[in-house]
Length: 224
Image 1 (cartoon, rainbow, N blue to C red):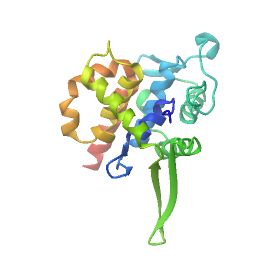
Image 2 (tube, rainbow, N blue to C red):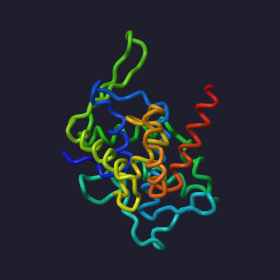
Image 3 (cartoon, helix red, strand yellow):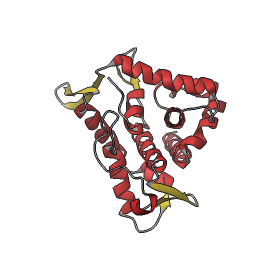
Image 4 (cartoon, rainbow, N blue to C red):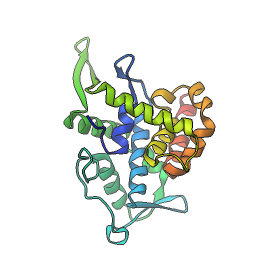
């Protein structure tokens, strides 16, 4: 099976723990998925940075926006989360800061990506109740080899450490994983070991990564 074509879909799968066969606990997953959607929209030319704020680029001006739709395996279209974020941005008359869009509707972002991956048969989702009372959702990937290949792609780009040589998608995923403290880069030791390489990948991903990192730091300081 090929991985989903969208950054949010691939990021979600990279949050999966293959050793324990379950999703890793990722408090900032919703923010990271929204940052991935913003990154994808920017790389598609649908949005741009305007003095630290997100500006919508009209399709007629860009001339290259993909049509909204589910991400086909290698086919055209925009994934559901990126389409939703684009609609949110278009509904605002004034440009807003990147972090504002990262912080919005985090739980909905997780549900949207999870449901789309389930519909595309990349994951299996089971809704349960702990002690017959507390609702719980269990996620299982259907193709472990595919997820392992995704991890390998990110590992490879971090070994290269040069944005000029890196694949833009893999570089963006690495930067998002680090800023969102997701998956294999959740621990500070893991991030510290590759901090210089992550910094080299960040310009490829764009302003959403810095906004994600700021949002994560703010949330952690409030929790402390």
